[in-house]
Length: 63
Figure (tube, rainbow, N blue to C red):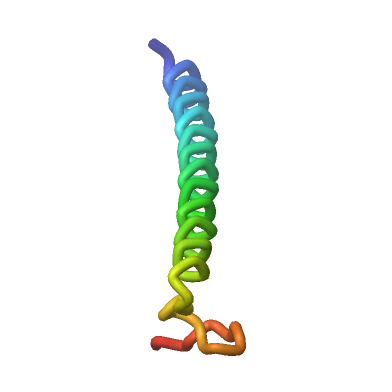
């Protein structure tokens, strides 16, 4: 196998993995957003508030 063939193959693998990682992280982000929405609905139904937010909806700074 020539060096240029190896470089081309390596580039193709890198592009594939980059797309796969981007896709998986996008899917994970959607799932986490859905979980956040569902938890907020549960808090609302229980009459409480999300512990990560103040009563006026501002996100707490926990740094």
